[in-house]
Length: 337
Image (tube, rainbow, N blue to C red):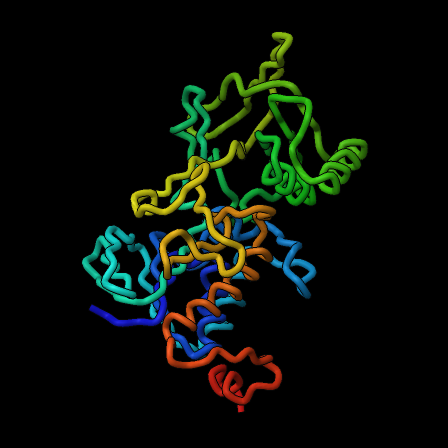
C-alpha cells in the first residue's frame, strides 16, 4: 500500500492543475483515470476544438491545453495510473484507503475527485444502418479535423458542440447544420456567427427535422432528413457528425455515500469538501450555489481545495500563503533557480 498526501481521481485539465496546486505546496499526489491517456474530455471528445476561455490564452485546442498543463507539472514527478478505475474507498481514522480494479492500493488523508462528469459515452443515432458506419463515416467526436477537409458534412445537434464544429469546419468544407428544433442552445456569439455564414451561403441550416435514412453501402453517399411537416429532403453527404450530448455514468463514485444532486456531488464553496472529511470534488462533477461549468472555475476550485489538503496532510505545520513569483521555496519546487 502506497502512502501519499493526496489521491487525485481524474486526469483532465482540472485534475492536472490540482497536481500543480498540491505540488507547489509541497504535497505529493498520484492521479488515477479510467481513460488510457491524460486530458479527460478535452482529449476524448474535442482535442482539435478551439477553447477560448483560458486566461491569457486567446485560443488553444483541447490537446494543446492538456500538453501545457502536463508540462507544467513535470517538476513534481507525479505517478499516473491510467486505464484504471477506483473500485473501493474505505476510511482508516483520518485517512482514506483506495483500491483500484488493478489491485493497486493507496492511503492518503485527502482525495480530490476531478472526474469531470464521470465516465461518459455519446448518445448514438438510433437510425437503421448507423452502427455499420460508425468511426468511419459517422462520428460523435472530432479528433482530427483534417479528415473532414473539402467534404460534404451533415452536423446534427443544437448545442455548443454542434455549433462550434459547424463554425470551425465551414472554413474548408460544405456544412449542413441539422436540428430537430428551430431554436439552438449555443452561445449568442456563436449563433450570430452561424447566421452570418448562412447568409454567405457557407452553412445551410435545416430545421425542424431529424435524420430519416442513410444511403450507401461501404461508405455514405447521401442522407435524407424528415421535416416536422412530413417533407423529406435528400442531402449529399460524405460524413455525419452527431452531437446529441453524452450519457453520464458516475460508476463506483455514486456508492461512496457522498451527497449527490442530479449526478453531481454537493460541496461547500469554502474549500470544495464534500460531506466526507478529506474528500473533495472539483470541476464539472461538483455542485454548489452559483456553480459555472467552466475549466476556469475548476482551476479556482482546486486552488482552494489544495489549501485544505495541506492542512490535513501537514496538521503540525501552519499554512502560509505565498506568491509563486516571490517564494524561493515554491521556485525550488518548480525546479527554478
